[in-house]
Amino acid sequence: MALMTNSLILKLEKYGRLSDDEKRALDNAIARIRIVDADEDIIREGDRPTDSSLLLEGFAARYKIVSNGRRQISAIHVAGDFIDLHSFLLKTMDHGVLALTNCRIALVPHATLERITDEYPHLTRLLWLNTLIDGAVHREWLTAMGRLSATAHMAHLICELYLRLKAIGRVEGDTIQLPITQAELGDTLGLSTVHVNRVLQELRKEGLIRFQGDALTILDWERLKKVGEFTSTYLSLQNEDRQP
Amino acid sequence: MALMTNSLILKLEKYGRLSDDEKRALDNAIARIRIVDADEDIIREGDRPTDSSLLLEGFAARYKIVSNGRRQISAIHVAGDFIDLHSFLLKTMDHGVLALTNCRIALVPHATLERITDEYPHLTRLLWLNTLIDGAVHREWLTAMGRLSATAHMAHLICELYLRLKAIGRVEGDTIQLPITQAELGDTLGLSTVHVNRVLQELRKEGLIRFQGDALTILDWERLKKVGEFTSTYLSLQNEDRQP
DNA sequence: CTTGAGCATAAACATATGTGAGTGCGGCTG
DNA sequence: CAGCCGCACTCACATATGTTTATGCTCAAG
Image (cartoon, rainbow over all chains, first blue to last red; front, top):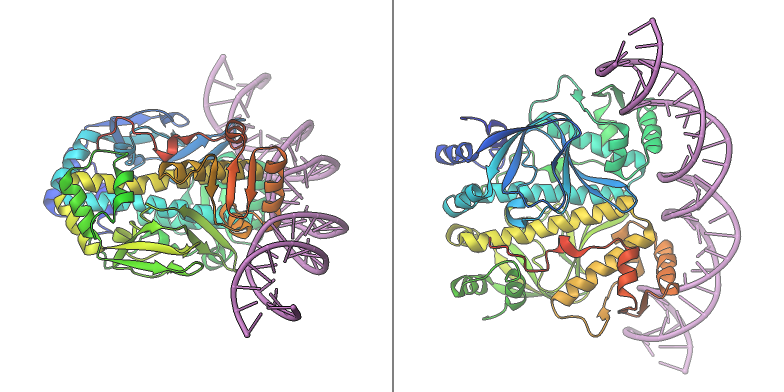
């Protein structure tokens, strides 16, 4: 089971140095591996999971369903993301998580997390920080949703996903694999699929991106950032002199 | 300084029992009290505060400014809320916090928080949980923003504020004091002030609320909830059998 | 090889919400 | 007491985005 938590450790080390002891604790925390097929739920709203899920491979989306079947995606997760660390303390899921692709998931029992918080205060702070960054992303999305045009919002999302995938080494040249449909993008941005299509056309016409199949290529990063009013600070990807 | 943290303790105790020792630790954590006048910034984007702010009295709003001066409010805080507990770990503020009214604030040094996380794992989990609930609120707002009509969104917000104020004993009859302008409501919901006005008219005409000056009265709770597609679970106000 | 499902795309039309400008009220402030 | 400022409120008009419906492509299944 050793080094299963590689991607998470990599991520946490951006925030602060991990001792060997802490790394071992994380690695031992994984109870088992779970595979979830594309389009299946990883967790459902109302569930009371006993483990938290660490996404090792694949893409996943947190979502809520509203009355008339409309859906809002509130987060998109990539490899290395702890997709429901909060369920450790929040207990009942107030939203579902969907596998956008086939996913490989490491399960960390809440009991183990509790032990970690009892024994490893520094590691606890890093895990906490991890959930705080989720919150920062939520705030950024809220701002983009409320105050940016649909086009700007899309550009913003693309910038974010690009940097997050880059941070885990999933960028080739200027291209990322983004296995997400236009309908799902619509649910993420709060738009209709028709309008998602319009907006993508526009970004293409402006020469900012190419998007064929799952391959999304950034053609003009600077202008894309400008259109999306994007600054990356909220992602906390640079190792500041933070030492939690 | 004793019992300054009353409102916070009250809130944390909804999530789990606090030992006397833990209560004392919290109370001793307050280094000093700060007064901020209405319409002043409590913290600005880019600040690197050395203390976290616990709102003892008043209303505050987290916000971000977008290019053309547009503003998005991502949270509204009331007495008992830890408005920037996350700055303890996130270090740099990625958004500002504005005093909507005169505010009384307790300052908790980050160094003290660090000591608490070293020595009080159970209390640490409660504080963490506190930030996780902020995250749950963000997700709910995102959903309301992306997938509800302006009217429903407004109804949703009113339901939430009503329950949160009720939880801290700030409801008289069916009336809450909501010292927030229509422009600020617009920045919260991502709407123009004109449309905020229209939407409020509609809720009034439907006999759901009365809103004169700062006094907001719920006239028909059940129908308001229905219009706003509101369920309160995400607020974690009921003491479930949670024992972090 | 055929079929059909899922998806991207398109056009015509509908509407929720934004914009700009203006009125009037109430409460500070000089 | 006058004057002004912030705020709620209105109207006419503009537009971004949603809705409905349809087409064609690609790919997997039979």
